[in-house]
Image 1 (cartoon, rainbow, N blue to C red):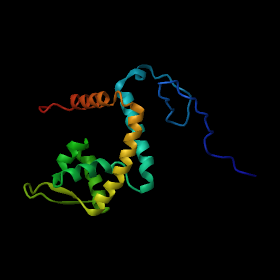
Image 2 (cartoon, helix red, strand yellow; image 1 turned 90 degrees about the horizontal axis):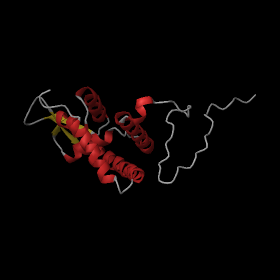
Image 3 (cartoon, rainbow, N blue to C red; image 1 turned 90 degrees about the vertical axis):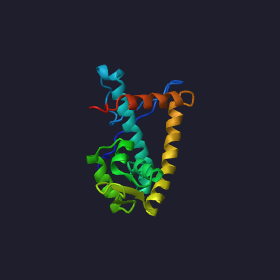
Image 4 (cartoon, rainbow, N blue to C red; image 1 turned 135 degrees about the horizontal axis):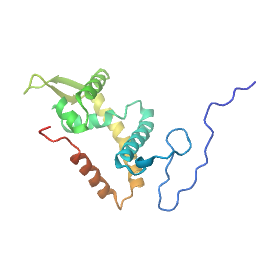
Length: 179
């Protein structure tokens, strides 16, 4: 006897109303749930958008065998050879507990070099290896295609305002220097 298929049933996609982006259910097509105040909460929708964006980028880069989380790290090191791990963490929004294992993995994979800083022997100076430059090039191609998809979803007429709003959120939510 044939085994039943374990794949989820296909869902017919409804066309989006003109000018309104189609929203999709992210978790297996479960029935719609009432979200209460989350339905209008900016933070909740920012998190969902970030997760959807990261998942889409991961699908795009999966074929290359490269982790999408490496892209920002490689790009910032490329633009700032010799920077410290602390400066990198600040630039990409990662704390030491998240960044250190990522850098160790990237070093094991031969993508970066961590050498002692010439100005502060307590810190590391980060540089890309030739393999890191190649990985950055591949990920950069995927990132450009991904950003083109995001640009199409946001729309050229509000792209600059949208970026400005995201930057204001980022800057406005950073901790105060005296905290």
